[in-house]
Amino acid sequence: MTPFRTDRHRMHIIDLHTHNIPEPAGSAVYCLPLGVTEIPAGQICSAGIHPWDAETAGEEQFAWVERMLSLDSVVSVGEVGFDRLRGPSLNIQEAVFARQVELSEKYGKPLVIHSVKSTDLLLAMKRELCPAMPWAVHGFRGGTRLAGELLDHGLSISFGVRSNPDALRYVGIDRMLAETDSHIGIDSVISAMAPVLGIPADVVTDRLQSNLSVFLEPVLARWEKNCIFASEQTDK
Ligand SMILES: [Zn+2]
Image 1 (spheres, rainbow, N blue to C red):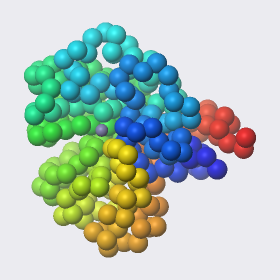
Image 2: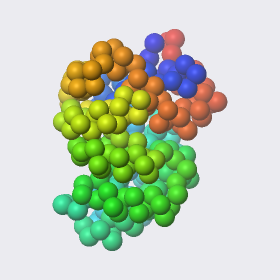
Image 3: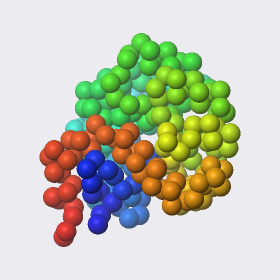
């Protein structure tokens, strides 16, 4: 069975976000470097303009994002967002973010967010834009208060290996997403989470798969309808 395969809207992957080309192909959502012309074979990807790159984002970069989002193997928009410690002025970051929210809605693909000291701005945008697509803050390292604010506003939270244990327990296994963001394996993330949550690693694995499937439901429903990966990638 390939990692692509969906059983009634269920995806057999856990890792929401990585910058390393996943092995085996399709075992994580691979964040495409800005401007790449080809999707590595068999990968499931996300595409977006990072806030650090917002200064130089012009029509060419937005056209690239659109081109990528029109592909079935690109399942999310990201990472996009705000960073108060790095990148251009917040006005520029905000304009680039808002435009990518429009693309997320237009192509029906969930949003994966980079947010550094910008939760106020992010929540203001969420209230203003009222998106239909789900949003997830990736690489969350904040505490319970910040986690609570995000959840109250309907955002999902994705945890990596360096997470705040109190926030992990507060969000709980039913609502969290997980990611590597780098070369470490998702198993390391799960092994770190399981004792904090007090849940066996295999149960954590199972729940994280379900949670990612729910987050990507808008895309998985289309896959199933079009039988995209089921027919192209399996039983070869
Ligand atoms: Zn990242």
